[in-house]
Figure 1: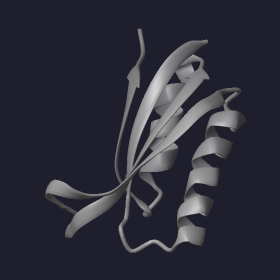
Figure 2 (figure 1 turned 180 degrees about the vertical axis):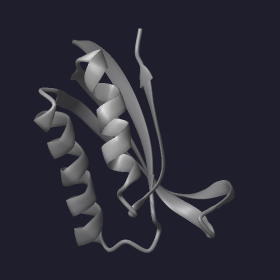
Figure 3 (figure 1 turned 30 degrees about the horizontal axis):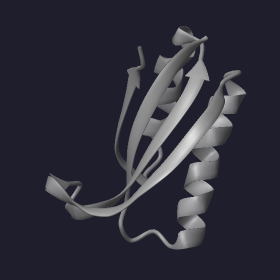
Amino acid sequence: MNSYEGMFIFKPDLSKDNLDKTLAQVRDIIAKHNGSASDIKELGRQKLAYPIKKEREGFYYLINFHIDPEAVSKIKKTLALNESILRMMIIKRA
């Protein structure tokens, strides 16, 4: 298993409950592919450098997790369908 870091930007109009549900979905998808989320950091609501899907702000979250390399592309495809996520980036940690 490799270590990965995922930066997620969620829609700014999500309620606290919906934000928690979306984070739970991200953790569940990682767990479904035999991974484990080790650290979740809330970076708060921040202004975007440029509009994404007509939004100018977003909730930023940094998630560190361990998972097999083959599962990363599957996770990206699954999470790309989630409309609550404006943008995400997953990189391998050294």
